[in-house]
Amino acid sequence: MVKIEVLGPGCANCQRLEANARQAVAMAGVEAEVVHVLDYRDIMARGVMSTPGLVIDDRVVSVGRVPSAADIAGWLKAT
Image (cartoon, rainbow, N blue to C red; front, side, top):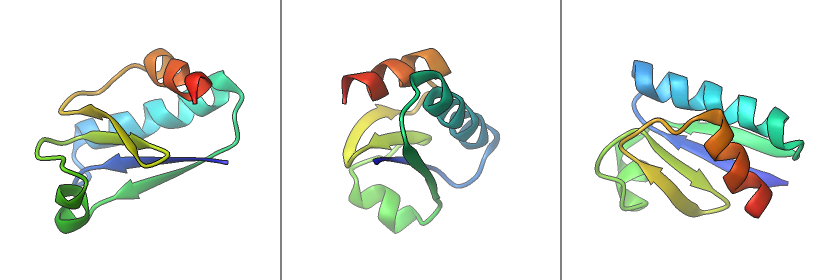
């Protein structure tokens, strides 16, 4: 199972990223767990200083922007 983490305080962009990540899971046809990480200490521990951030299987793949569901689906298929 793929683990996807959305890193951010819950702002509109963070919520949009989480929605895109969930849509990407369906598009890619993979089994995944999507978790929203709100704690700034946990976010900074990943080296993310600009939110939202996206982590797939412990690898930071996006920082400071909201990638499309299609982009995320592509990353999921590549894992």
